[in-house]
Length: 361
Image 1: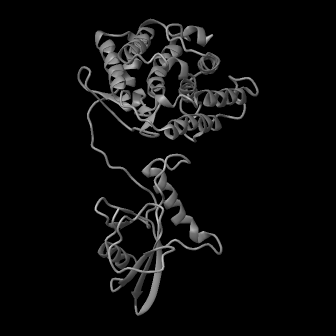
Image 2: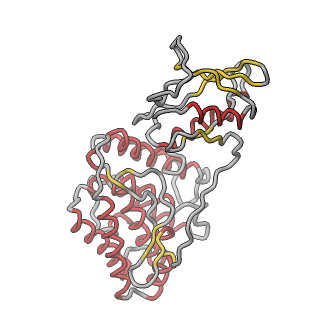
Image 3: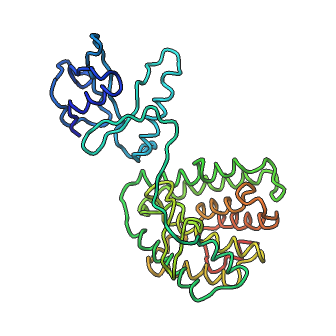
């Protein structure tokens, strides 16, 4: 990226003094300054900025983070998070060089300050529709209609389509597998929120579950060819249907790339969840919808390997719906049944979507 002198000066005037005059620029380590634009400014290469303000000389170091895959720096948001944290904390530690500001570059190279930010927000378009979980509640009590089967087909087709976009980047796949187990929003974080000794579990059972999940992380490390475009949180509260099979998805989360199993289990777990609440089994129309969802997806994608990697993703989703925090009104027998499912799936090499009830026992 080229850095224009005028943009740097305009930014410093807003930050320091409107009468500030930029004197020179040079990459750290170089001895000869320049008064021209900086060509090819690279991420991770600090730039020494020298100026005069109020009759006094001043200087500052402008730096960013190098774009790389791995070490949790894969996404623009990762690097933004680190820089925002550094700006907020450098000055709090004795003898640490202070941060003067944090900001971002626009596409045209302008520098924009965000150093005074306390919280960030997101502004989105409003869409009409009704969340898909209302359909599942109705099916649980009244049974399915032809439209319910058409909607399941539409959901499976949608996932097959977005998952067809592949990416060759092993560090991103390793990150996804690491995060499904160890991230604060995923398995370890959800289990940290469970009470110390839940009445529906045996002592030490959560420890055993965690160990199984870690074992699956190491089993999946070599499956990097599975990296594809994902939604990341494709559950019934994030799908809004209008008429027929017309729908919009909400709240994409946890990265642009991952394993298709993440999206599949986020939705499929809920057919099990609603059915177990009624009969402790996967039965009736919810069973038919569950199996149609898998059959349609596998038919469209040919991704039979999905059933070999799906276990930790199902475990995560089962932990969520069994959570006393997220679903406080569930009785303990339902929670116990969901943990049966989770542990039996984690103990199986290949998931059999046509025999879910064997995992519920």
